Length: 102
Image (tube, rainbow, N blue to C red):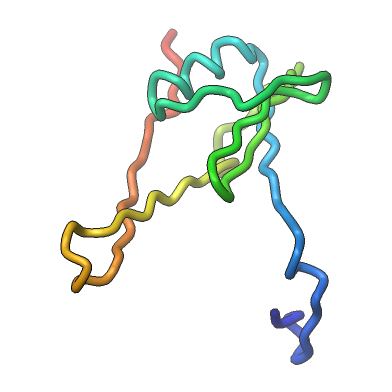
């Protein structure tokens, strides 16, 4: 992997990344992920609610702050393969509304 400075480093070769997402109402966020994405928590602990699916990992944690909503906190890219094995795989990008009902 390139270090961005012309060299290479093995630092990230065995690293795992997990997005951490703040949630004022963790139960509501869990329900939203279940309804919109069909995802159920893999496990819960004192750190938060963990979702793991293959190499995709993220965690919800209880937050007292308010997000500005002006930036992306988690982007999921769903890659699917066409039925024919002779065609190359393609990515399907989907957006979900993150507006909060009033």
